[in-house]
Figure 1 (cartoon, rainbow, N blue to C red):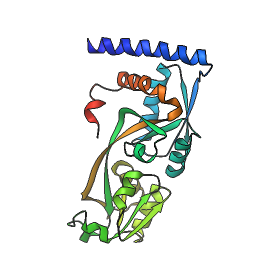
Figure 2: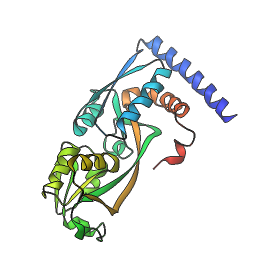
Figure 3: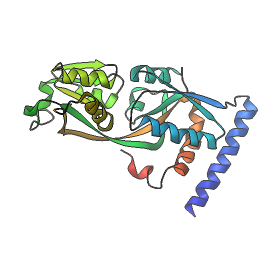
Figure 4: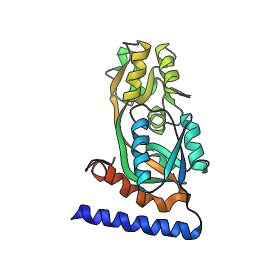
Length: 234
């Protein structure tokens, strides 16, 4: 019964939305989203969003930028929104409206190649040099307050600095970090258990598309497995 009600609401809202936009002369058949390379998150998010927006009769175009440039373009309205980011982004950029259905969940860590750090608490780790990818807010927050903090442009640069001894800790999402570590052949780099955190990732629309949010949420709930939305919010 709940599923029938949801489908009915989705159909009614879609008709009303399309009618309102057509009357206003504002119909838009293509939306342009900015994003950044995040293996394990971005490819899956793009695929799901293409299908969800297709249900609404809208095509999406995606451009890949540096993480910092991507979010600034979305917040400034240079793009129609951001493909996928953690829920903390909305607090920093109020012009972005969260589509409240998580697209992915990921573990994040501080990675190191210094065995003596393994037994330290999160607070004690602040006495060391830390780095993160600029634009990755979860990693920026994790690194904040460290002895030295370095912001770089991409994960490969971050782990190269760690591998070269220029950093003590690199804060990053687990899945892409492990791929880079394997590529570098850096077997001595590993995650610090004291730094483990879990985040859910969401799609964001620029505020000019605020009316689209409930429609996209309904479309995503229909596309994603049951229980992957409200039950898994961080």
